[in-house]
Amino acid sequence: MPLAPTPSQTIGPYFAMALPFPGGADLAPAGHPDAVTLHGYVLDGPGAPVPDALLEFWQAAPDGSPAGAAAGPRRDGDAFTGFARVSTGEDGHYALRTLLPGGAPYLALCLFARGLPHHLFTRVYVRPPGDDPLLAALPAERRATLLAAHDAARPRSYRFDVRLQGDEHHAETVFLHFGGAP
Amino acid sequence: MAANGPARERRETRRVDGFGEAPAYVGVVERRPRQPPVPVVLAPGAVELAGPLFGTRDVGPFDADLTRQHPGEPLGERITVSGRVLDGRGRPVRGQLVELWQANAAGRYAHRLDDRRAPLDPNFTGTGRCLTDDSGRYRFTTIRPGAYPWASHPHAWRPAHLHFSLFGTAFTQRLVTQMYFPNDPLLPYDAIRNALPDPDARRRLVAVYDPDLNEPELSLGYHWDIVLDGPAATWTAPASVPAQGGR
Image 1 (cartoon, chains in turn purple, blue):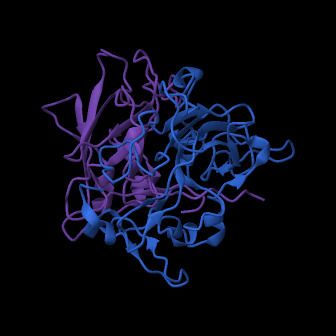
Image 2 (cartoon, helix red, strand yellow):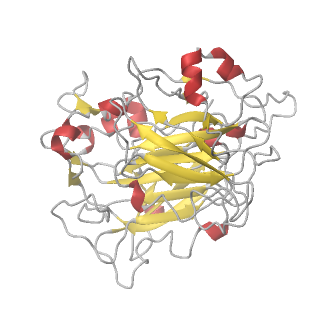
Image 3 (spheres, chains in turn brown, orange):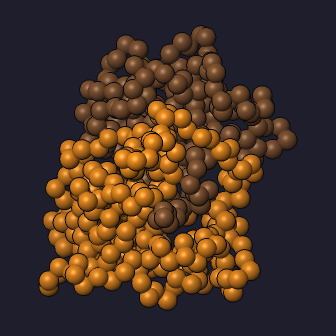
């Protein structure tokens, strides 16, 4: 019989004293020629920036293997870690430097913020997915919320905004549930 | 809370039948998704079934003892908090990062947004880290945090609590939560804990006083086990049962 899970509680307003760490936005080794920037804004329902969100990214390495180097708070910056932890600024913006994942073409994203009783999972697709069952099952408008925008003029930069709540004009980012209790 | 003010905070709670006068936290209304999360069945090998690796280098010698991070001794009652991190099948989660943050003994956080009328403690920051051992066990020495008022509703005080951040073997198991202390009279009134509709779930956030964890002449011991949710990465099937991969 499975053990009952420990429930989630909101991250609250004070996590910044403990969780962010230097180099947390760098998945790519320092100076790596293939490094790309992934950046964007976290917005609430009315479109206001969310200045106190924490975003964690986890992704496969360029060779497709889902195992990076030691990923923690005292990383040395020399190896690909697969894991990033970034906070949004006052303007709701975040940015990280990474190498594009091999294999499945997405980064997993776990988002925390004051005011969210439970974290939110989603995916950031950085390449046109071929045969992806999640994307195939979504209506086009919602599917688009999971695709990072690639600016042809800035080949090393990808844009991905998170809209926590949609309205009649803006699609809400698709959030995911992987099983276990919602 | 200075950036948002009492009016904003007040909209984060609502009264719920069954909690008497105690409201439940619903979060910031403008930040709550309106759509239910989309269920995803992860295929074996999906990146979400693995997770980041941590190592002994990630934890410093005083990271797990929050009373030793400054030259002087912090004010407050010393406590030792320990337990095991397990997955849903009861297997220990080994070598994973556990992070902790908390208010000081006066109920104030060392954070610029906490400008409440209570003293900061120059000998206490209130952040800690450790790695779980081979049996999944974590252990922190710290001080018992104070309760503090917040503006969600009249007479709202947060009970003493520790914020915990946990990683499993799979990214799906990520958890941020709060631990409470037994017999705290503020617990039934706490909107944050009351956000959980299930009374059993609320109870699972409360530690147990455990004299075996007391450090003689130093600290009171509290035991709190943590069970991570979500599909795990590496299920070792019993010999007679075929492996089922990523569920």
